[in-house]
Length: 249
Image (cartoon, rainbow, N blue to C red):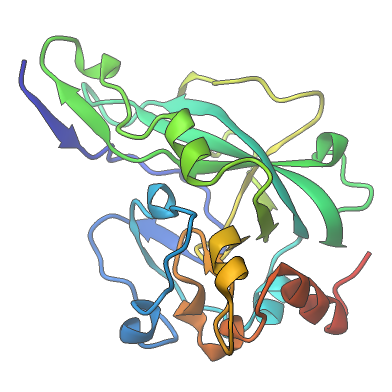
């Protein structure tokens, strides 16, 4: 059986104005790439989220990004589930999405009264990454390299997180082969821009000293926007910073 990794080429059609995902172009950011390369390594593994390069104008601070997005919320990872499975191109492999569930504990913007946030949960659809070529089965049966469990192991439930989501417009994902695990009631899938996920790494927090931050970026390294993103040393600091800039409910 011949197997090799094959990229799923079709990406979600709806991405917020903060960035557009492209598999081939190098990133153009507001901070030097060398600075981003210095990101600290802790117990979390964000590599499953970093499956494409993104060409986008980076927000230079958390409050700048918060001003651009309709929803800002801190909380904990509630879990991961299978998201929509999409058609990619004729006779091509399927394009998988994984859904990150975030349980909101600190609403900062756009949460109150929003029916799409069912039971205080945010459902964020993310690219699940490449599929594995398997010539023993039809192309549309090739499976993702990263399973839902892989995401859960890399970024487990209970991890503190802050997200900057936006509701997907209806039918924006394109042709859906399988809707994945059902969402409750009026809950809506959300997207996030490249800087739209910030996590608190437990290991980095435990050994933090001096100027080191325990925060890490999800889809992109935390400091792609510049030094202001490194000023908060933990999630409490980041939430407080946003509240001091008027983001509070």
